[in-house]
Length: 229
Image 1 (cartoon, rainbow, N blue to C red):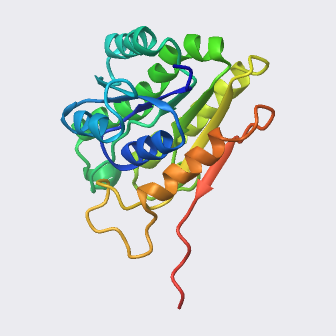
Image 2: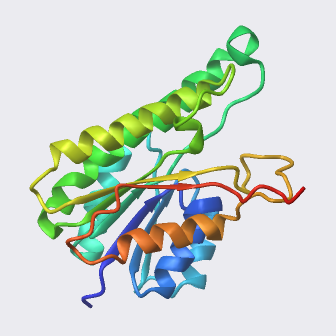
Image 3: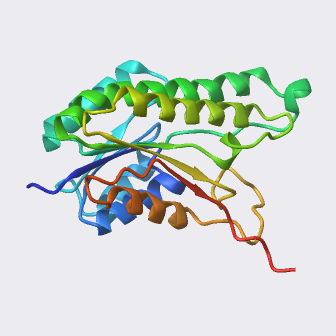
């Protein structure tokens, strides 16, 4: 089988799962990674079974998990053409004065360290395929949000994207930052009526990866259309 291979972390729900469905429809074979495999196994069956989809338990805070993910993907499919470093988590209210530092720790390790180590683990395979690297940033990584450590982590993801793009200049690998605004996912208990859907973000991902090789879509910033007043 020669269909290109699309790897997604944080693939069990939200933007990751929506992107998996969109990528399957576009003809990609899939490597789906998340901390829990229960939802991944259901996605595997939905999207074509083991011949088309590989589900892997992976905590992006653990280098050994990420290395095993890439090794297993290469053994199963022989290549990785697209890697989407999408795993992330939100924070809790309280601002810098009252937030729980343990929540900060897990969020920082997932959103920043996890993104960086996902990039590192996937780069050798992407260099061979002259592939495409995508990272889930956020509108929160482009503006100042009062008291938000989550925003700080997404500023860091933007910096990772800019930095790795320069490091990879001339290798043929394309790098795209996907930066959603408020999206109706598990991050928000009560998203506004005009929130984006996970499918909206997945469509942006597919747009970026479907461009011809000489087109490098650096960033896609996606906001909900303001409500008509």
